[in-house]
Length: 303
Length: 303
Image 1 (cartoon, chains in turn blue, orange):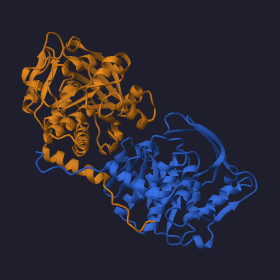
Image 2 (tube, each protein chain N blue to C red; image 1 turned 90 degrees about the vertical axis):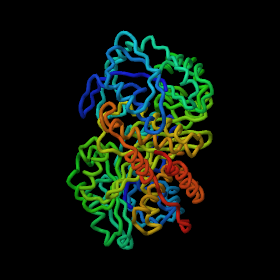
Image 3 (tube, rainbow over the protein chains, first blue to last red; image 1 turned 120 degrees about the horizontal axis):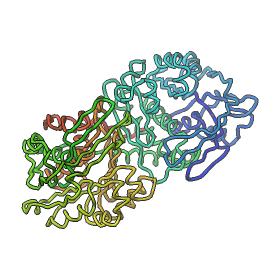
Image 4 (tube, chains in turn brown, yellow; image 1 turned 180 degrees about the vertical axis):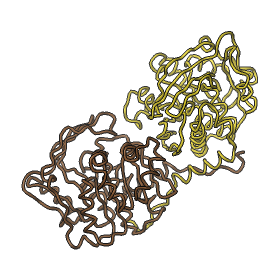
């Protein structure tokens, strides 16, 4: 996976933290590490804390592709109101990330599952140029790139199996308010599968002619939604890589596993909850998703 | 069921209609009539069209409880933007509805399943005083009554089995932004079961200690969401009355049947789609809901 590594300052109605580990690569890699070996490509500055490196190592994440450069690490400052679906960005300092050019160590280049987190689509293309025969490539993106880098983004979409994107951004990319029509338009741009993320309202997966829906897990304590989308992607890709089979059935399970990892992630700030998570907890919540949506067939007599 | 019968003027980005049949009682009764015998209590004015009466009769709806009084029928004028979740009310003329006092014909008083649509909670209490031994009572309400008639609304909630309510109104009633906590607060007010409606994001049912989620059906053509909540309630209550069993299993099926009826209703203006609907179409969409949310258990090897 390639993505950002950040030091975040986050404020929600339930508390505030400063100078904590964040960024798509941190959330994705930690979530995915419960299921598979993860190779991380990213960049940090001189101020990047040793305990974050230790966390990656403890989770078995390969950080040979993690560059350390002069200057500071990428920093993001954001705030959420009671509507936890929408972050307000207060400050972004690209720092080390500004001149980042992803370089894959040779042993990464044969990896079968590739995730391109939400970064400049030109950098996503550079990563794709370095992987040899991936079995399954997924990417994320955002409004900023849809507005400013549509041509390279469309080139990326031609080369990925899966796009994960927020609902509003799907509408923007397709220029279509109806989400089913928007999905069809986006699938015509290249990806075989599209996952539309709706935050606390779950996620829809359009895979060829089939549609699958996963709710967000109803939680009593949501402290910080930062990283939910990347934890989701980490659970999804990690699960797929684990079973090493890409089918409608495994992708449906992967979507639930992504939702499972996202549901844990939002229960605390930064990566605190993911750090303490165990596989039995993951398995139990996956099963709780099943009970949340299961219903019996119609009796024959209803007519 | 007791509720409003209206003549609506509705505008959406996909068209506009004027002077069409609307109101909670019309949507609920028509949807429920696919599953059970419906007894309607409501009021209309002298201008109420004969073809609406014919529709009720064709659907087998008992309209002995439908009063006709001097003056005009209740009229509502509303508009929706591309965010079809939120109606903007442009005009409301209570007319015949202003002095409405529900009177149940004697043969209605033994009915087992009772639905109190979104009307003044004092009127909902008057209906409850006229039914003898209902097996299952459900009600709907809205922000207007939560603000202005909280005491009688709380008296209603002590006497119903089920409350259906929109998400924002659930937060308002419970004075709690988190929806799981809000649900617990509302269940403590009386109802054994709570359904929180989220429009295009589906519905959550809290039934004692269990939680069930139904998505909204992903549709390519949503023309008019007016009456979706009442079609939902009609499908829910009609299904329960049909199987005449109130259990976790039947209520889950009922929630899907409610979502099914709501999904048809939004496909056209007024009751146009419900009018032409057939039971095989209903059954097929119920099954499509199943395929929308079904996923396989985890393999034993994932650890």
